[in-house]
Length: 499
Image 1 (tube, one colour):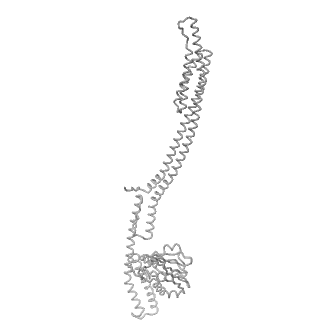
Image 2: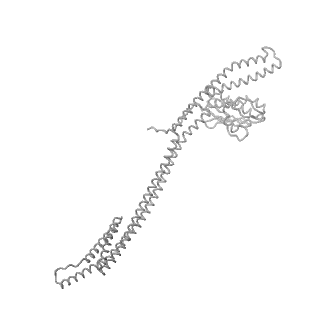
Image 3: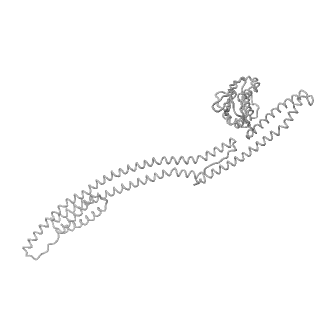
């Protein structure tokens, strides 16, 4: 399954923001639903408890009114009081029916059922006691006796029924008190549920944080990687590396930008190749006429083509000096062109590096004597695998620069030692040193350092560039070391030769 890359960098950023915030959104929604659910449960419990309390209180008050009506009817015998009691009974039936629809527990349901049945029996007794006396066909005296007996019996039943109102009130009060206990238990249950919900939300928050950090890390990497690749590609082009292909992985618009940078790399490489070819060709083409000029000037200086007067001899000397400088420049251009193109043939063989350093020091001894420069050399016996002539060019350029930039009576330190798998060569002078701005440009071709106390020195700015290319061909390095003194400190590192 292939990963479909987003079309643009903006879409990648928005997608990353959405996925990073998704766990937080889910956690917030879940927390909101949990709190709403808990709030609904609490609200329903409170409303139900309030309704049960109110209904039971109303029933208690209604029973008190019904008892009063029934006793008044028993004493006064007024039919209107019985009608009012009957109306209250109907209202009692309606209230208890509504109360039965509420969420009562088992104890409350039992008390309510007993309350309803007891009140109904009381109503039936009171209703029977209020009915008219009907004649039975007996003699008047006998009927009076029977009527008195019936009346006495009814009065006794009525009295017993009235006494039941006290138990009815107790049952209504019991329902209300039981409801208070239920409310208390529900409150405790709600408190436990709230604590449990709180714990769940805390754990959810703790579990969301790692996921959010993970998503954020992934998308920060996805977002920063193409930017880092573009920055590296630009640095690569700035450092003159036109051979390594540029490939940017990421959104399609950044990939297209990477393709444009790679196209630019190819064009710069073509221009660099054309420049190098032109430089090499012109350098070689100039060698032949320069050799003829030098030969002609030598013949004139020797008087072979005729005697020259003193003025002409001075001009001839100037021509000889400039022709030598021009030849040196052409040779440096040729060497740099070959080294930069990696076309210089490196004949690898064991090289006694300390012997090369000693020969180079002897070659520059006249220049050191002319400026009374002291050479402090400590070259341990070391052997490397490389091209002796090119390594000699590297060392010669370093010592030559040290002599040129050292002041009168200065000191040049040259040390050579082995450190593990590498050979380290240090060349230190007492000159003006290298500024931080020059440090990163010193190995660029044709770059020349600033003036010395003696003024600007003659040079073409190719010596260190050639040394850099030759050492790269030998898998070595050259760098400028921060030096506590006032001079410059160059360090060369080469792989040691293993016998």
